[in-house]
Every structure is written in C-alpha cells, then in structure tokens.
Length: 118
Image (cartoon, rainbow, N blue to C red; front, side, top):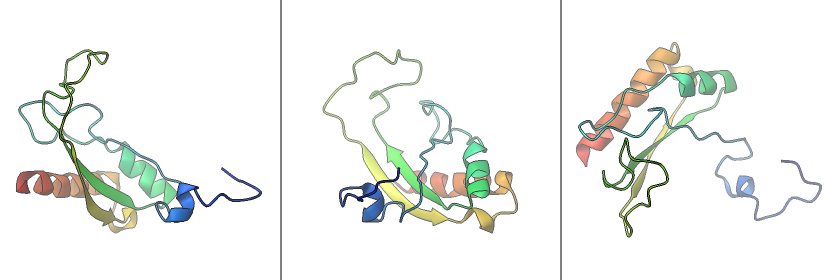
C-alpha cells in the first residue's frame, strides 16, 4: 500500500513489519488433531521466507480443543468465552538453514519445545 500522505495509524509505521510486507502462515495447514501437540509442518512457509529473504517469526497459539475442533463444520458456533493464549517465541532467519526442509524442521522443533513446556 502506498500513500501520498502516510497515515500514522498505518501498522507498518508502528514496527510490526518495520516497513516490510508481512505474511501470516499456519504451516500445519489445518487444525491440530486432538491427540497430538503439533501436526507435521508443510514447508511452503519456509520456501516463501527464503525467496523473500524474510525472517520467520514463531508464534504459538494455544486454545481449548473444543473451541473449533478438527472435523467440526466451520459454520459451527464456537463456545464462548474461551481462553486463547498467543505466545511470540522469537524470530528465525531463513538464511540460517541450508534449505526449506531444514528450516521447517528447526521451526517444528522450536514450536514443539514451546508447546511441551506449557
């Protein structure tokens, strides 16, 4: 987005992306199954990060399993109130990994460790 007169309310000016475009990706590709902490990650996010030379910001999202369970129709109304915890785990440079597969494995390891610690 380009503006002749930048608005101070523009989120890019508040440091979220520090002037760079942001992409949000959920590398599991679907909701996590009830019997596992983390589904296998798909490497698409790592390919995007490597090609864009952009860092990967790790975010863990914890929510009740019954909030929007896997297999439930998307139009099902969620049970509220619900406690959802979002944790910023840090940033990883895509250039630190040899390839998308390695970056995907490193991200999966950090996310798994963070989810196991809670």
